[in-house]
Amino acid sequence: MRVTLVGPTHPYKGGVAQHTTMLAEHLAEAGHRVDLLSWSAQYPKRLYPGELELDESRTEATFPGTRRALAWYDPTSWWRSAAGPASDADLVVLSVVNGFQVPAYAAIMKRVRRHGARVVALCHNVKPHEADPLQQRLLKWLLGSVDGVLVHSEVEAGTARSVGVAAPVVARLPFFFPTPESGPRPPGERSGRLLFFGLVRPYKGIDVLIRAVARADTPVELTIAGEFWTPVEHTRELARELGLEDRVQIIDDYLAPEAIMDLFSEHDALVCPYLSGTGSQQPQIAHLAGRPAIATRVGDLADQVVDGVDGMLVEPGDVDALAAAIDRLYDGETLEALTSGVRPPDVPAQWAGYIEALLSA
Image (cartoon, rainbow, N blue to C red; front, top):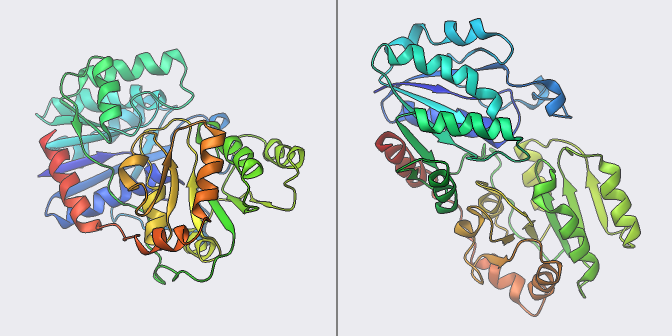
């Protein structure tokens, strides 16, 4: 098929950009002609407190022939971008994250449909994190206007149906983390250290995790590594209030894949204390690194952790339950048993199933 994929890609940061890039690569490997149309400006700078793009010293893969032609503030770019390769596409896939994209997507959809293209919304968030009512209305309109909708969990499918999508297609989010050349670090002796990494946003429950570390009987240390969307001093102050200054290390920086693997070599397990969410691959990254994960039953996190086999699952927002899970992790040989149960993600099989679901949408 002739596919135009529209979404953020390298050098933008974050999982959505990584996913878009990997999707383009896997579609091309499957024999499709792929046109990747991306953004030169995704949304107003004020919405994101950090640097939007990776600098040249921390590059990730770029799909050949990527067109970074879209700008949220320039309607002429929306119309022009739908010409060229997009104008003869069989399928146009819109990577949906927030409502700021909808006007551009509406213009693209109108133009490509003149040439008979079908349009699928690939929803990372049916209802975006911290979205205002206007964004939600725009996204509801978009999902009612496309030819198909793909979501990454049954929970998200229910959310899609609640806004009028009759038959959303569900496909588990495939593993798209840029695998470092050095590969996973083999587990060593217990370090007594737990890891949280990634963009630090309120819905990810970092406050719950810090309180759980304080409440647990096991005196573990915690590393929080990632770029903060809220003032990092708030997190440091909470650690001080709970007497954890010496046990909570904060690395306020966006880390490259190699650096993340290095961090795993110094930690026993990953903790994903999310309060809400849709799709994430954090537990699978832990499994790639050979480490178990403690995660909440949020979004698709529970699909990635087999409770008692390669990690533990707890309810979101429950400090006592998370503290108890930390204590269980270090009780007897539990940590070693969970570590031995870890298996790396089957990347080819995941992508094959995902592309089949996308094309069926």
